[in-house]
Length: 348
Image 1 (spheres, rainbow, N blue to C red):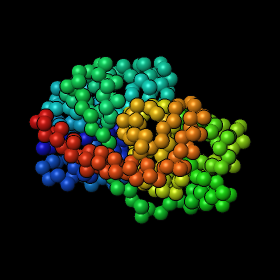
Image 2 (image 1 turned 60 degrees about the horizontal axis):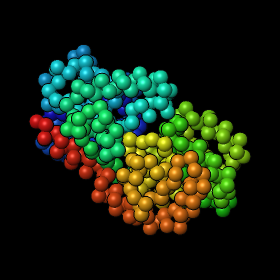
Image 3 (image 1 turned 120 degrees about the horizontal axis):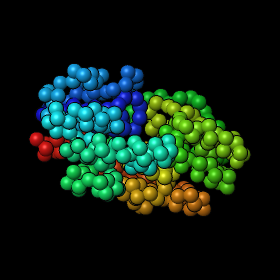
């Protein structure tokens, strides 16, 4: 079985980390030959992929060499759409609520234009893999249920031998020396991630500090908000850090206040590290875990967030153990690879 997996770029992003986990796990299955193609020139050499990797040559691509083309992202989807007649079988993985995601990242006009374009590109795929049941239900408005499949993202074992950066550890130790609990979050900083909710909560929860790992368009706005709310001394903005999961074990609680997610990789990574988790009560998060495993709060309800944090501080460790069991049973890289392998077999 010959599979070509195509992505936009080799950078440390959630979707790329999922693909890395997938191909490295599929590599162990000897009945599959996989090659990974990427579009952009820039390559993050910390991405550890053990299958053959090559930059996509769109003009000279040998379609006959592959039984399945598996695309991830709008540009790979466009490549497959344009060459659909040359492809034996096309699978695309959907990772977001397309109109919501684009609206939060850009604006409503861009969301409508490119959202409609993406729906057209997906229409010619043979199979669309959604990374959650919530996504599948969302896309049933446009595609038949038989075209849609659900396979959860899988998380690889964390590399706990990687040395953390001193400035983050020093910030955490500094907060603790003042008697503060350390809350943490990690994300590409856009409005969709809802990080401002944590900052507003810190005004009233004066026994907590916050470490924010990530970069993005909202970084400056969040820094300004922390100064306006006079909580900047209890906040540490680290910017982007490679392999951010290695810091999660230092947090007293991980908070994921997203307004929309197709899956929620950082949430599952925090669970993998057995960290107590507080998260927004969006459908995707309630699908992944229940309230016996993580603690939910209502979006844009500061009192609900404060209550959830207090609950997590008391019950979080017990919940973290239960959530970890759910992780092992549902969200590992081996399980993800097994389900994709079964899908690949079923379509040939």
